[in-house]
Image 1: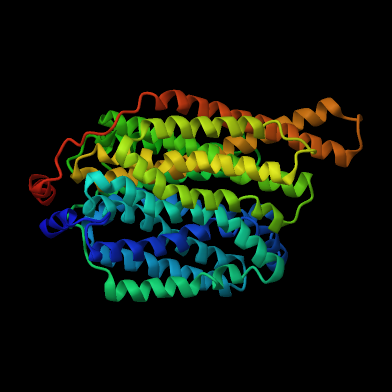
Image 2: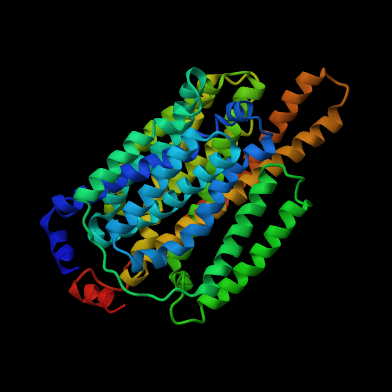
Length: 497
């Protein structure tokens, strides 16, 4: 560890050429994994037609993916302390690549789902691992720039996913969504095998099996329950929603109590004793929920109300993704200079303004206007996501970095599932009420479109309300002051744990 502390003083964002190589190979791995998360959304209808499955079955390709990530990420804190950077990264990429190949050649739904589950297992490990490595090798003064650099791919990948998916699905088989990712994933594995070095300290923590069971039931139950509600499996009164959600809430309560009472917690929740970490995590969860509103609702509106093709619906997201990629390193440098507070205030203000305007789009709203609004929304998100996350983790002592990254990643996944469920429920209920009140006033096809617009208005107004709360909270953000210095003393404390 001392050699990495020394390398921090050598200049450059990542401290040394060796560190730069480590981060670049990890960025490429995370890029293909995150890209893969959004590739399938536009292609689900083609997959349903090709392998003969119903929409409720096809949604498991998304739900199962989220479920595995939600269950796996809480365990990453233990895995990052137990295994070396190199072995854990290679294991994650091999899982992801094997899953990608299985999905590409899958003869039916069951094999395709197995492939998606393996992909999710690899993806769930990669982002927390990369974030932990950044905080291990980059000095606090340059972490904003470093996180901004990785933010280029983390924000760009999900934005271009629908566009790439639209192009591929329109001209080729959906299987090419997986075949196109394979060569990149194989390159990352080969490059990492020869070039990736270990940059974090390993210890020998014991895994608490009771915590593992409670974590799996808790996070898994909540993600599954809310995902089922979001996919319309009978609504909130359905057994598919109520039972797993109830089990998840009870298990999560017991998990929280156990983590605060045992000597070696699976996920150290003492991170929430730090005020900036606590507030920043809340803001990021709200941002995730709001971001899902645009990513989910806009393609539905463009295809179902305005009759655009999947490719045209996907292209709406592309300029926003490009802007996020350009802005990410810029906001990273601004964070290093000025901190996260005003970036968050301005970014959330921009998000709130665009969500409000989205709530009032109509059939006469032009394609270019929707594209510009989405680009402004993504600009707002790019201004605050990585700075707020970096600010949160900066407040923690080094021994809690692995736990902090695992907690933030887990809660973002939970927020995504909860946000999607809430927004879909609000949209569905508002659309139904509109149809009941307007029955007989127009032809049926016009009524369906108008009810969709009414439902979207309610969902976007909810997202606006959430962002308004986060905007008010962002004024309370302070610049993190780490409780332990970046000196050799901090390094010794890390080694002692």
